[in-house]
Length: 352
Ligand code: KG4
Ligand code: ZN
Image (cartoon, rainbow, N blue to C red; front, side):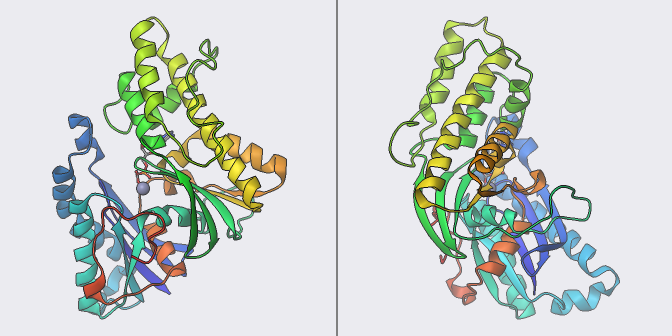
């Protein structure tokens, strides 16, 4: 079954075609992130206008690489595509609407079913894609369920028990800033980047050879007996730390900050794994690209003998490949009139 998916929840415009939920056939991503760097954060209307500008070229390029020469007859009937999938939320309403309306139009013109997908659930399915030929490493196996999933992105930090496809129990999440948001805001405080500075902060942290601040920053809620997170105080603590001690090297602050975030994420995630006695741990979202987080969770998982699945770096950030995969495993096709963009969708709303 070939699913054509569209993702447009924030500042990426993406389109992919995936076979049977696991094999990537074609994929294109275009991003307006550079533009938001200038304004120091995403301006929703600017992001939405860019979605409008990119959606047709991105779709066209994705379809072109799928059909090759049979373009005309393909475009008329969507031959070879069995269903369309689209991210319906959470995200920015203006951005979401562009993808949802494009998907509805294609579904209507080609007489194909349309499958709505929750973006957060999508991140989980980055673990279900079979590796491309160029990938190396251990033999690939599809994640076994039940599993504990940590979704860490720019807008969300959620711990979820995934009992089966489409069956989720929310264990906890951030009560204020998401982990990625804390990375980005701290990167801004350190003057590294005005928008999406998580990668830069992490690269700088890796250059620190002597963390003279060890244990100085708070590890919020680390010993609390639940699965909630809070990262806004941590960012504020960094602010006061550098205000009082302007001579501390930036890489030391970056290192201590990254350690603090990872300490909390690792401790609570492993606590959830042990409490629910699962044999599988999965990671998803942009912050799943963080090297320290990946390595520490791998180490912890191997020490207690459970399987861990972490998406390859290219599938951590937003794209439509995992949206197609999520649609295949959670095939909830609905009448077009019932499919709507919903910016406030939560992880539990898989059947929006
Ligand atoms: O999932 P994503 O691409 O977009 C959302 O759905 O939010 O996540 C983006 C977030 C940003 O906050 C970005 O700074 C963070 O992921 N991020 C990282 C790293 N790579 C991306 N944070 C820490 N370390 C990284 N290596
Ligand atoms: Zn995302």
